[in-house]
Image (tube, rainbow, N blue to C red; front, top):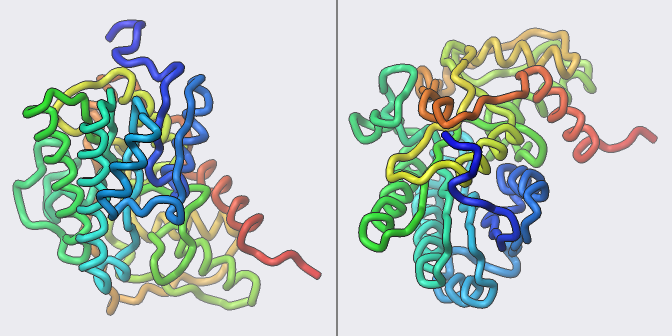
Length: 319
């Protein structure tokens, strides 16, 4: 490692594809510290599944760096009930953005994957070389296959065209701008919304899907954004890099922590008829650590910031 970044973002035109999502919004917040010009396009302005539209937009805006944070995402229910959308949308988004970036001469591209790319029973913690060594978790295989294709796409453009395209694999993220729709949300916002409602209504219990035994690693989204900007500056390689905290908890422990933050004092009722998903998802973050980055936000601090945002944005004011 040297004091001089391998790639400087200063003064660059940087496109955050998917700036309206949780990770994209966090990236925009972080990149505003870099003295760079942010480029964004809403879904109404640009359908990233439309190849011609993406090519035209990129040609006209000429970004020098691109963060591919756009994706069709969701929790177990969304993945399981909308497999075609999760596969098609994500394949099209990543293919169109990568190809248009190559055609317009983008200097640096950072593709965001997901820890669900790893085999369901991968050795824990999951190292980068666990990719494609076993079957995927069935409940999110469609999303995982699309993200694996994105990693390979960046590797292929690097090999064939010499493009400085890298891939980062974030762990389970939570934070401000998260999706609190119970039909599509991940575990943290789903439990937070349920517990807030239970607290407000005086309910004595909250349902939690599954047994509560699976283990999950959680990372505050602003920490993730900081790690991605760090990788953009210092990393250039074909191999993807895990982005996480290197620590995990059971779903039951996570639910108890959220209950404490929300102030819900009732019981947790585990519905064992619902799927547990992958038994454990803990990333090996040694490669990221060796590149000089570590997280700075504790789980409680991150959950408290997320809950404040949720209450401010989603809970009606008292009359």
